Amino acid sequence: MEHPGQLDFETLAAHAGAHRATGETRATSSALSPSTTYTYDSIADVHAALGPDPQGFAYSRNSNPTVATFEEVMAELEDAEEVVAFGSGMAAIHSVFLGMGLEAGDSVTVASDLYGATRSLLSLLASFDVSAHYVDIMDIRAVESALKNARSRLLYLESISNPLLRVPDIKALVKLAHRHRAVLVVDNTFASPLLIRPLQHGVDVVVHSATKYIAGHGDVMAGLVAGTASTARRVRAVRTGSGGILSPFDAWLAMRGVKTLPLRVARQSDSALEMAQWLESCPWIRRVYYPGLASHPQHERAAELFGGRFGGVVAFDLSGNRETTLAFIDSLRIIGSATTLGDVVSLVLYPPLSSHRMLDPNELQAVGIGDSLLRLSVGLESVRDLKADLHQAALAVGISQTETAASLLT
Ligand SMILES: Cc1ncc(COP(=O)(O)O)c(C=O)c1O
Image (cartoon, rainbow, N blue to C red; front, side, top):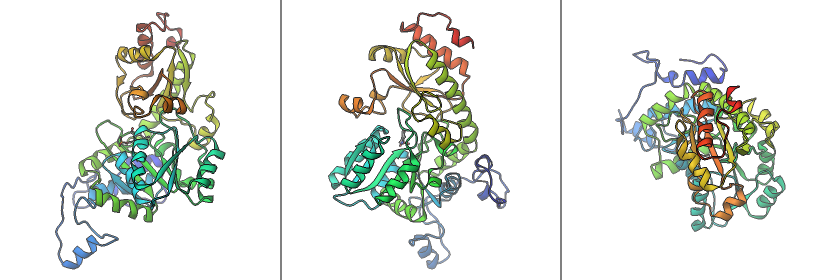
């Protein structure tokens, strides 16, 4: 099916994969092609399939028709020349660190408020004499001095940070990175391409844990790298060498998830905003972190960058200590305790024991992750049920004494 001109995001998402779904059957859903290998009519075809710019398919560790269809869909949604799909977000991030030309003696400048496993991966680069410099990404001067002084070839950050939901000044950082000849890589997992397509702002490379909002249903592990054709060629070489390609079935499932990405993320963002506003009014909450709140330090920037939606994740500090916070999680009945986000069900996570468990107490403190911080990924349940669940947990652990929270009735 040809797309008539420039279509809107919702239309592209709903038709995900349909451009490869015609043929004999005229199916509306794209085909699933689990074949591991492909036969050829001639040796010339073998050569074309295995060459540097492969024509056709050779072996499914290199590329696969269903994975390629998913990549085409995501290239449209991220406004990228090309997308390369991986078996997890970490495999995608690994391919960027390995594929983007870092050499011994180079460094990477990294936002300190960052998904913990990305930090762990960066620490492995030390054995290749590539160091990571962590900076407060809100402090443009600190970023500039790290780029200048540390032979930094790459600047790495998250468009909405995990877990404190900070929103960096992407436009200023693009200029800064390019002035210092550093490649700017943005992890767009929390925002999803519905909120922002960082390549449109001049970012060089976008990575995703597509396990989260893109696939969206808690049943697929997947990762993406989006960028120019030259970036794609580099990271694809890492993928072929390491065997990190996405499986065809997971590509197919992820593509099915993409069809409802705009609906899901819009609803999750609306619900998260309502939850954040309510949490801010609860006496048993010390602080709420959500870019949609007027109280958030980067609220105006987020409103401008994300077009009025702020994502489905809210973080908050309970008024209580670590024990109370852990007991609070155990008391929840609807909201599950799990180490992921972007699912259709709401999930809560305690960063010091999960996403950021590899940070020692000093590092946690330096990043701003306190003992009572919780990260809530808001799903598709009714907001009233979610508020009631949080409130009954607050009653159960004794941080709220109000049997019927007035704010629940509004
Ligand atoms: C911001 C962010 N980036 C990357 C990842 C890694 O993705 P995956 O778990 O799909 O490997 C995660 C996982 O939670 C994440 O939150």
